[in-house]
Length: 130
Image 1 (cartoon, helix red, strand yellow):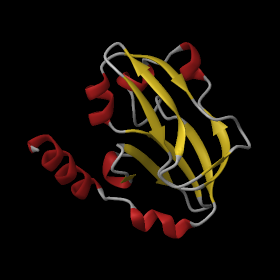
Image 2 (spheres, one colour):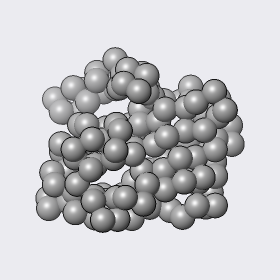
Image 3 (cartoon, one colour):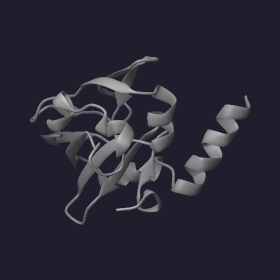
Image 4 (tube, one colour):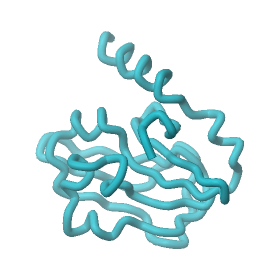
């Protein structure tokens, strides 16, 4: 899985959706870099429902505290429990070891509301210039 295979939200979360409609969710490298050293991640529990662009948790770093928003709606199937003891994986490996939740999408068409890597990179550049 590479960054160009993902879809991105304006809140800097990414998702990779497999052929079964299950999405792997995390935050972008840009978000991880902006936050600085992550020290705590609070995520939903398995079985919780999340809404597209709705709050799915919180993340705390040495520089900031931020809410996490789900890029899609659905049911949480798995949570990356390793982050409880090793939140720094979000910084070290945001697209692999630092993923946050797996979610069964309730509506796969919600993916169309997200950005490609090129669109996301343009969004970040535009946001930083404002």
